[in-house]
Image (cartoon, rainbow, N blue to C red):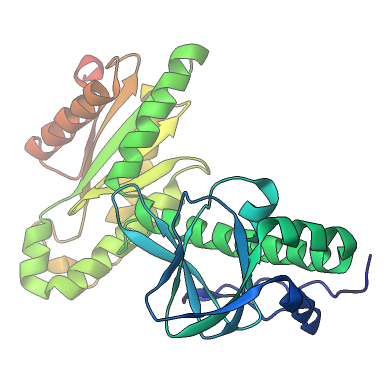
Length: 320
């Protein structure tokens, strides 16, 4: 160890990640390169370019960006004076992993990759500091990717999983079940007369109902069950390892929990309380694939609606 302090623990924030300033010893890089102005908007290098040089930022601010598959660009971090950019590509000989451009008028020190590598062989203290910088970046980007992914798979109102994630997981779990022989069940739910509730109490109260129903469904499920908002006032649950009987039991417990909850203004509903209807179907008993399983559960749900609501119906094969 060389005496450099480790960076403070990563503290996530909602903004662009800013590179912390490097120690004064990085001034030792000055004799290795050539100073150059960099007008605002200038691109130092693009993603995929060769890592033939490193820059030490002397003045201004640089943005490190990454191009997404669709062509959009996302800012990964902002560099401030004292920061080094491009060192990883210069060290491993790989192509640039990101684009770097000047956010405003900058002044940089350009250092050839060969000179930079030779310098680090004699300065393990700076090599260690670069290691901690990379670790800081990895932690920051891991947090941002995790947050972005969570937003992509979550319904913003109820914080349940969304329709897309539910369908993806169903396909995965059915593929696993075909190899293991485990059952998989799907339950679909719909809030009875929800339009009537919205018309009577307004969308704000309707949203509160959606949030509470989501919470009650989540609490009814087991840890590991995938409970999702399927769309509008419709919800879904993916129950791995559950056959028709276990799925019916789960759905009935959910129905009872919601029927028994004291929702604001529920007395104005046609049945005098707020209720749900549900339909369940299980693999392999009721369907052989994800589309068939959802259709079987959906048919059961509409049968429950047609038979008076506030009830759970099994798939056709299991109907009494």
